[in-house]
Length: 189
Ligand SMILES: [Zn+2]
Ligand SMILES: [Zn+2]
Image 1 (cartoon, rainbow, N blue to C red):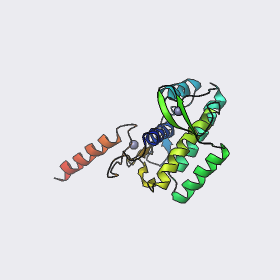
Image 2: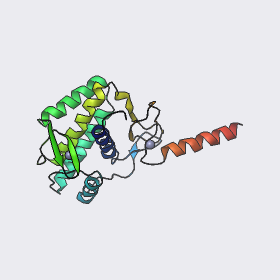
Image 3: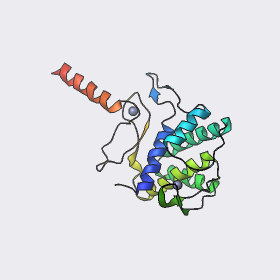
Image 4: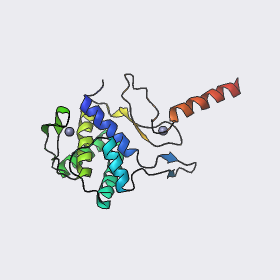
């Protein structure tokens, strides 16, 4: 394990949030594709899948706030170290994050840095920011990547031992790349 279990879960959850945005890159460089976070129902699904606890509004404003946070997290994920530090510190300061050990549902003691009554977008952002604190101080920021497929801009958290992961798992990017490489080898053989 590269990071603590909590940190890895939070990073995977942040990746899943960021990748709800369109991730297909057209030939002209435009990002296209479906947005999986457009409605209250799709946010409900996401929250259920990612098992976020705490307060909910079930409103369009809440969806908008989560979408804004999604964009902010993408910027942080793809930033260099200095910018990432500024963004993480900014997010934690804005949310007035206060780390506390908590126990809820079936989970043993773990860290929350926002109250369960804080807005969902803020809780999502702070949880990701706390995980990014671990990543940055562990000098592991290079594990946050953008998918290597030329037509995909999904983000990837590389939790492999030798930092060898290149493709996202939102679509089939790794398989497509292997098939393309195989075809190329065959056609040049
Ligand atoms: Zn919790
Ligand atoms: Zn991809």
